[in-house]
Length: 492
Image (cartoon, rainbow, N blue to C red; front, side, top):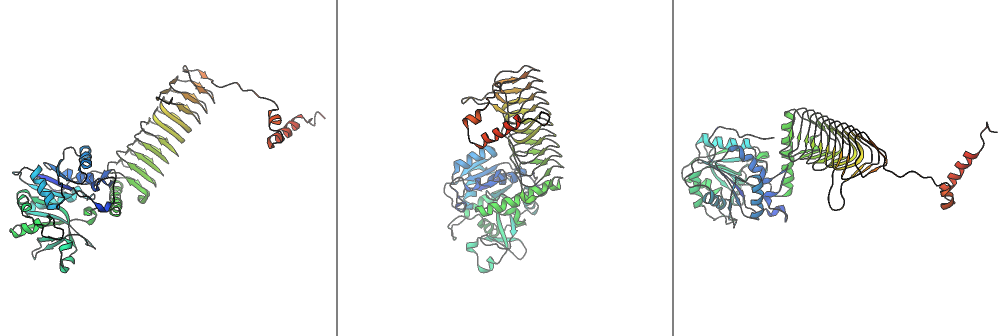
């Protein structure tokens, strides 16, 4: 569900997202670290979504490792963002310096927000609180921090006697006393642009990693006599993802957050542990989600619908009071009062109008089914249009593919097609028409006609006894024939 940033401060001059790192702990040859993600977004996408409500004048993403893939991804999710190359990853301070020099005018006035590209749990409210506190305090810089039960690996926030931030010390460079501090920097900052621009030119590489640390800007600002403030946020909002274990944990946290928001808005979730949503899913009040439901992409579900158990919907809209169970649907539109399943498959291009029934082991692809029509069971409907209030018999196949091209079948309104029919496209069945069971329909059926397209039955007497002599079937047939030939009591 979308968030808004809190606070009423002026929009930042820029948001800088650091997304150049390789992320070796992801152990991935398939994609850059920041393009891993969950809930329908990359980690970078989550960060940009959290920052978007700040309405910054410009968004700058620092790219480096596999930059072309990251730039291509940005073109799809944030085409307004500028990119700056960090060909050599010489630290976060170096990345920010390049971003300012490459994409932020030197005379820009206001706040620069810096966020890491691998913090997908960041929220708009946390960033809004950071910017608001930065503006209210008049600080040169404001840090977003968290207090962790185990701060191992994180930079420690060292405060002065007055409670203001004195410096941030990286874990590798911290003393024993500093390592005992539980408040950590989250790599999320709000800076005065002019002061930041000056400070990053004064960074040193005299540290354990030989890099320009952005946290060292805090010490520079303090040494210059400027005040540095901090806003403490929950670790659930600031946690980064360095490997797939952390990514899975973040996904669970994010999913719990989404479900809680939907439940507080009137959605019933019977089993949150087995229910997973993407970020863009929309649910109206009085929707019920039963166990093992997975809603992906831009799926939307209207009021009163019941989804599950065992349902996966991707980019699918569902109308009010519809009931779907044990079904997979992709890129489909489902009307109101529809019943689907169990064990149905709606492939891309399926459109079901109101009050349609789709039953067990039915598959549809590029099929439009009119109001009140039924496809109850064991049927494939591909490249077809079915009118209103028609019934499709069991075990029907819409034969849409000739080995080269797909062809369309049209079934009219109030039609009744028999069981075990094959409609060899292109073919049309008129309104009110019937087709006999077992028919292979290769020609158009006029409105109101009965189409019978099957061979006349012929019984070859004695075939089993001649061709299968001695078999169980032959013996059974012989007994039945003998019983039929025996005189009845009346005849005796």
